[in-house]
Image 1: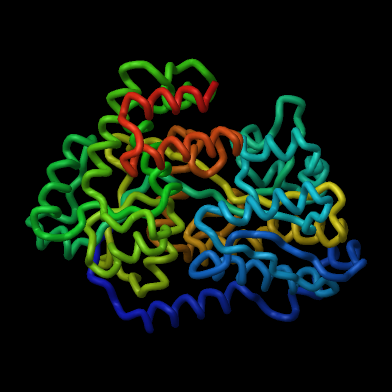
Image 2: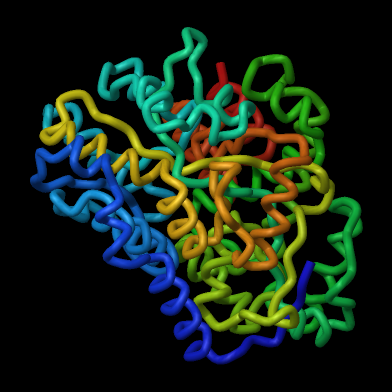
Length: 430
């Protein structure tokens, strides 16, 4: 845990710029790359992502810098489409794939989200590249298992590991509310007392944004109340969505939503995180891409902000991973392969994750100069119980997530009651 009085954005931007410059490396490194010679077809490589701004764009820029060094014969083409958690990008991507107009590669969340693309025969098995690039040994065995289908095929190469079950907080707001910024909360009931105190001080207790961030909060509440085994059972059918334990979790979700900002549906995640950075809100539940937002805002010192696992989830790591694919019919397949090599490389993973706030998927990456939070995430991923994120595609296919999102939006905007919400969640997972 660490806590907060925000430093100047100028200092943060300078440090970030230096970090990205360091990630870029020297001209000499490109001369050492044999893969650039092997994949020397050259040409443009369109990389389709939803990393269009802020810390996400900084991470992409860092990765592009490594790509240009490792594969100078190729020209990166930025196909980024803005939109929280990729909703707008995914809609446009599906239109392009259905029209047989794929980009050379596209970002997707590793895990069940890929199943729709696999079923539609829109992406290629890239497991042979794991052997060619040495990724089977470089990635943790548990991660490779999570990426593999039942027949052993793998359809993407992860660029990182993110943790979803993190609370971020502004210690000045907490102190003003009479709270100890270093306090730990064993469960949601203990956390409610702190939320009450912040609300009584006149600030927003829990900042949140549009629907996908609400689904993100929902999954962490389900994990907190059900525990990792029963939470995982929601996705494999062994936990009853209409059972009393889920009802209790949804009641907690409803209570937490009562602490949130009224303008939430018009915001995206950076806006909700910024409310904590600016001292307008006490807490925010968000994945650790928020780490880069705090760093970018100048929150660099051990006294700048607080983070801890969502109460009730200590020892559990709610996992997701950004990854890249090889689309069927990619215009420049050699360029796709070159990009995928960079994504999986030590240099690519170090540069990208240092800028984005996540941690490398590779176990041999050097994270010694990563942030304090990232160091804690490396340790947690190695030792905690791993579960798959709902909101970020690891736990369910896109169609199921869309149905859950629709049900959540109806509930949080007052268009349905809790019983209807629970029934709709159960129907979405049939």
